[in-house]
Amino acid sequence: MTDPMDQIRRDYVAEEGIVSAILGEVLQLKRADGSTVAFKTGKAAAGIGVGHDVCVVAVRGEDKAVVVLDRTTGLRHRSQILRGNTGPGFQKIGKASAWFNFALMMVPLLGQLASIAGLLGAIVGALVERSRKGSPPVSIMTMIVGVAIYLLGSGMLYLHWIWNGSAFLGFVVMVVGAAIFCFLARRSGTAFVEAMERFLDEHQRPGAAKSA
Image (cartoon, rainbow, N blue to C red; front, side):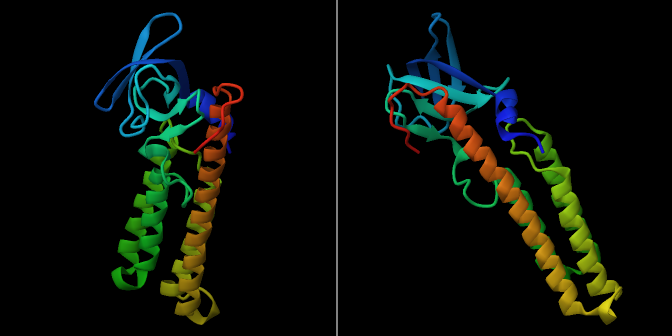
C-alpha cells in the first residue's frame, strides 16, 4: 500500500501566504513573492479573514482547497472532503463501502444477479476513487479479500457449495466479508487523515497551538 504521507506530497500542494480577498467561497492568497492564487474553499474559510497568514492545502493541479490552516492560531478549517472522516474511511471510499455493505444485506431479497451487480458497482467505484488524486489509498488486496469472502458466502448461500448449503452460515460469511472490507477501508482513511495532520504540522508556525 502507498505510504499516506508520500501520497499526500504527490497529490497535494500547500500554498502559504496572506489572504488578500475573500469572494464568496473563493479565497485569494498573496504569496511572499507578490503573486496571487485563488482557491475554492467552500465553507472551509468561514473563520478566515483578510490579512490572515494561512496555508491552503489543495489537490495538486486543481483549485479546490481541502484544508485552510491559520498559521498564527493553528486552527484548521476543513472542507467537506476532510470533514467527518472518523467513520469508515473518507467520504468517497466510505460511500463505496456503504453501497458494498448494502448490496450484501439485500442479497436474500434481490437475488444473486442483483447482488453481483451491486458488488461489481462497488468494486468499480472504489477502484475509480482509488485512482483519483486526493483519495485515500485502498489497496487491491483489500478489494480481493472482501470479494473473495463475499463470493464464498454467496456460494454457500445460493449454490450449496459446502456445509450442506447452510444459508444462514453463508449469510454470516458475507456479512463478515463486508465488515472486513469496511474495516480495511477505514484503516486506510484513518492513516490518511493522520498523515494529513503531520503534513499540516510542517506548515504551521512554531509555537502555534494545533487545533482541529
